[in-house]
Length: 454
Image (tube, rainbow, N blue to C red; front, side):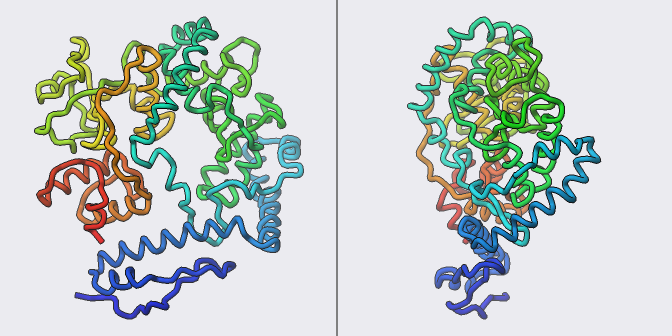
């Protein structure tokens, strides 16, 4: 079998042509490379490359004045050249572009940037959506959100009832999203949206995506939906209290208070009505719940999880699934579809999710986010906490999960893409792999499993 033996302890990779930063291969990595098969070498080298990419991102914020100056110049050439021509072809006027980009410069404080010649940066791989699930459901934070949500319900009860009647989305869901996204409008929205989007479109990780969003923001400005000074966002270009990207604003924002504007920065009715419209347009089923916390018997494979493996709730019951705390599934639900949801595998609460759960995921493509919204709704409505506890599973870096996914893909499993995220396809692939090697099926990675592939 071929081995890699030509690397010395002094071997180094240059990370970027404009950087003196280098990465030395440690003795441990060298021993792994020396004794590994070709497949494992590929995985190990991938880890080294990913680490180098993260280190490259750190150099952006310490770039020399000359390097920044060169990048800034290239940005101005692009913005007033190629991008301006594209925008005008899309119907954006010269007057709008002049107003939008007068004096604009790159925002170097934004994370996740990279120079034009560098590979994609992955320094977002520690966001809370991808850490141990237990930490996502911090009880102190949840209690605070419940308390504030109930005061907002008293203050805006008539508005919320009207929106709920119009769109069929429960007020608790609206309050949960509002609280999660912007602390009920109290969170600061610090960035000039056009500057943030233009920066992302030029030196961000997803340039084409953000160029599209920049065009949408210009369309907002041109239509008079918002003034230039009011166009504020997060560093990722999410706007206002619902944190809509510009394209989502154009598609889903509505006037909830009847003043003729769609003001998701200052108007509570506009904010809540826009959230409700988003969910309604993405398939929210009025009068239906998002899901039920359930007890999954050990005899039922956790690898049955996922929106593509649904069955009637009555069929889940026949397989031994029960609701927690001696509750029962409503009779009407037994002939409706349900989907096994186990965000921490066997290390946390399990659920039979309903189609509305996946509508919540259209707002933010994270199982934990959608579960948080559904759970907060339950707590606001009836203070109904989880019946089962979350185990303190280890936090993982996305690079760890990425390596595991590459290995599983090499073994023929569909992990949903080697993106470093522990989604349902990765969880069930882990479960199927565990079964194949004769260990207990947990459907969630652990350090022992990850270390076993290296």
